[in-house]
Image (cartoon, rainbow, N blue to C red; front, side, top):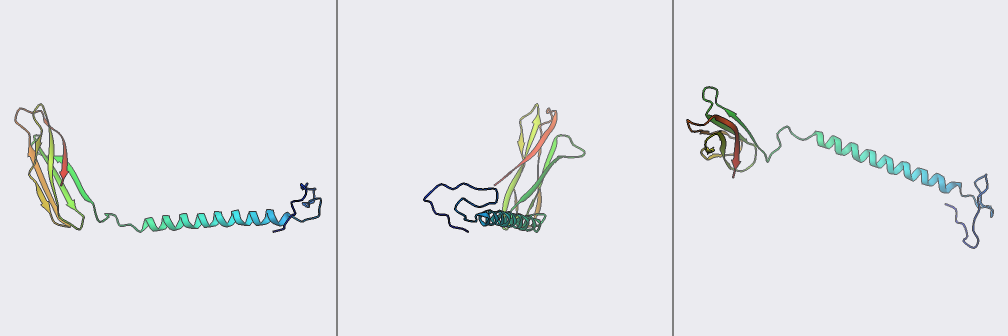
Length: 138
């Protein structure tokens, strides 16, 4: 990069030189190269992060996957099933929302790592049936 003395203000001519005949076109070229290098580094980093994210397993260790549903033959019976994908024991239970009756909680179920289990609750006979099934995890 060219050094330009600061004794007097510089004015540029159409040829890219100052009135004192200092060639400053190299300054612009270096800036362009720096911007290009920064853009390239950013692109390479983003690509590496994207490819690294694709290597994650479908079920990451550390999650408990649960689902809730209503029993096929009894609309008053709600069931929650959970799969323990963690490396430690977890305990869960079904939380059943009953229409026109108090909500009910199922029994606590303890799952070892990798184990699947179900918890269920039955609404009172005077309810309008299961509105939804959730779960609580300890």
